[in-house]
Image (cartoon, rainbow, N blue to C red; front, top):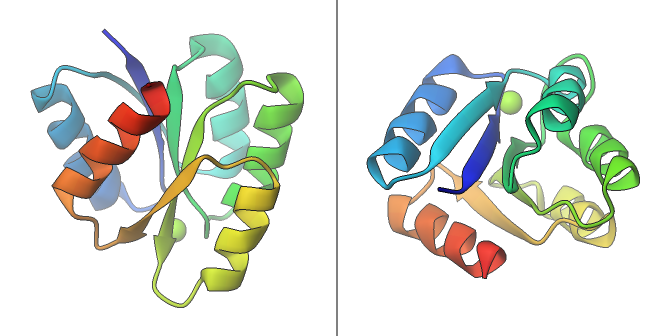
Length: 118
Ligand SMILES: [Mg+2]
């Protein structure tokens, strides 16, 4: 069973993603900001990370860089809002494997996870 870390400061988003992923057989751990994401990544060693960009206490781009410094093979998919194209470019340059635009399409989330987990 693959373990996914969901990182988003919006609780409803974590709940929706968590339901989708557990229903599809994934194990889930959560973090609600970038700072927590780095800590949980180190302790839970998720196979893949789904991470929001805009968050308090360290945004998704900073957390992405720290996670990739800790583990250069870390697989991170960014969750973005419309209009965040420049941040997506930065995230991909910083090592993000893919991105999913919110409000997310469940099928798109599942296919991004399957692709990244290979
Ligand atoms: Mg947010």
